[in-house]
Amino acid sequence: KAGVTQTPRYLIKTRGQQVTLSCSPISGHRSVSWYQQTPGQGLQFLFEYFSETQRNKGNFPGRFSGRQFSNSRSEMNVSTLELGDSALYLCASSLNSVTEAFFGQGTRLTVV
Amino acid sequence: ILNVEQSPQSLHVQEGDSTNFTCSFPSSNFYALHWYRWETAKSPEALFVMTLNGDEKKKGRISATLNTKEGYSYLYIKGSQPEDSATYLCAPLGTGANNLFFGTGTRLTVIP
Image (cartoon, rainbow over all chains, first blue to last red; front, side, top):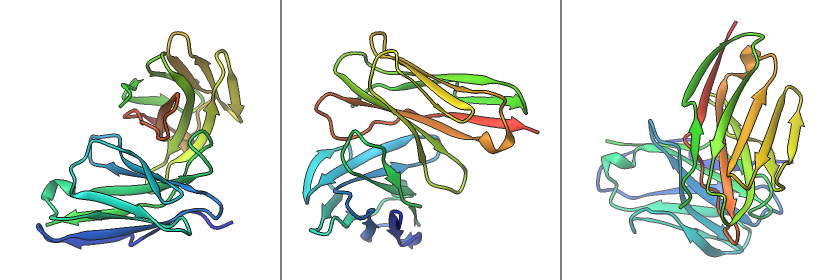
């Protein structure tokens, strides 16, 4: 079956712009989580959606937002980009929070 | 946010050596522990999901044990091979939680 698909794979944006990243989960998976990884840091949890509802949010400013559609596809948006937002953004889907998570290839965002 | 610690941060071993590393997490409100392997230029991939105290899981040359009372898990690799080179991440899940908090990982390099 198809894996988790993230688009785009690479993105370069300018400070102050906004960006939208997309994640298509494995068919049947209703939980989608987003993570940020910066050099020297582990995977930092951004938010988790289940059946179109955000159930959890990590310790990130309000510039980071997301949503999930009825087909479980999810998007995350970052407004007013800052240089420090340059990172690898990963999404992961799972049947529920206990079962293993399947990760996408990630979107590498560079803010210049 | 759960305080997850992994040690060591990095490890270099010779091909054929056996190795192990540790994941420490809060023992209260424990529900499950996930282990993932993250190879360079790939996505994190699930190794194990463990829930029971004393549980031991095995996949090929890799095995893991879990102690929920004292809040730690060990990951063992027997006869390390160069293809085992990766960052190994653990993520505990608390009772009632819906998202994983990852440790910073142990970066393993197996020298041929």
